Length: 136
Length: 485
Image (cartoon, one colour):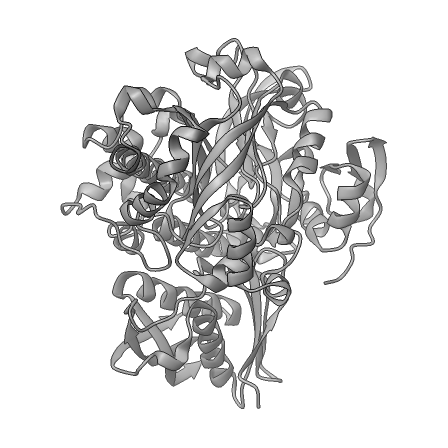
């Protein structure tokens, strides 16, 4: 099964992410976002960060999850490529995220992502699908 | 993308109205500045539905407006202008965007194209080397603990006092580069963490430095007041914003306001429009934090200005007075401000949201620098990297109709994916070089996404703003060198 697909949007980039569970769709959305930012093939899993969030509803959880990762990318300069969501429920998640510090000599950055937005956001817990538009 | 099929009524050749009757919940009609051709492009996507969504916001006055460069954004359309009554209206972080005070400044020089041409390669290399750019770029400025709060409170003044730039730069910056009403304690520690290492960086995406030459002068007398002397004169444009600090402020307050909307009983068609009453604690806190982010962006452009001047000095051998490099003006094009405007014959304080729109105040307005009191505020409209940029001035008509606002750029026409399908970064580079535009770019795929054809023609956008009377064309520049993040 496809992890995610990009959606056409004039100024920004959208993505649909899929999974066998909703947690997996959240992980794949994060993977999709980082593959917009960089070529993930060259990124090794040598650094990790714990993320723990709790929000009022599903959309807020997705918004915070992705923006939290962008915050970590900005301050710790880690390009993440694997997301182990160890706890997932209404509406909180705990995850360990793996990746590598950005190294301009080895990593190809494609595009900066400013933020994940609420615009057209969808969290479908029956199909285990999510949609998000990224501000780039 | 889906075409928008809602109702549009023609007002005149440059104005189109979306009637309030289109959807229940619209508090005011939509008003779009466009000609027939641009309107066709605009209707090809959902930007107009976003204009409609904005008209739902409490306290909105007049119209939910779209400038001719409008395109589909998130929440507000890009190119959107909306003013809310302070008394009972709202402020929306989505009406400003994530890149708070993304903006443009332009410097004039005493140099002609032929002075720079023999040293252009050295100049472009120096600019690329001296101004950190690209995703994840970190600046050369090391802020001491706590010093970020000074940047947030003082903006450009902080930078000038640290030796980045000249005191007179402040006079020709919107808000003098230092918005009042800030409160650094309303900016989260996360935002400060993101902003601290990034001060003095260009960023990526559509942000750029551009070496340009004047190639048309429409209003020679007005141009002369700005120091635009003649054709072939070299100019320098800087386009960037508040980096991760601004993005985090927007994130933080969108979250705050999503919660607050329940408290205030506000319901909206798009959560990205989340808002709170201007007078509420949440609204006041956002405005204080947003002004901090705006000041950060001005400090950022101010530091970059200093390195641009250094680059001219070392690469072209023209320093200080010999080079000129005076700041003509600096405008914000993602911002919300409390301003006094006339509403139905009465002066009222409004919270004017400009998201991808530029302030365009006429001659005689208090906030226009002394130097430009007789000509009006300079308005800077960068085009895409292969085409032109324009310098305009604000007008009385803008003050009356658009809360003193106009367009901000060319406006995207095609998605990034579509642009990349058309060309590769290498093709874009070659095509630009063939036209005498030297490019320095961090990312080849980023370059492809910024291909000229992905944008509307800035000339047709600016012509609408001019013909509609909401700003007046003064001069045009064409690029000869570009640094992309």
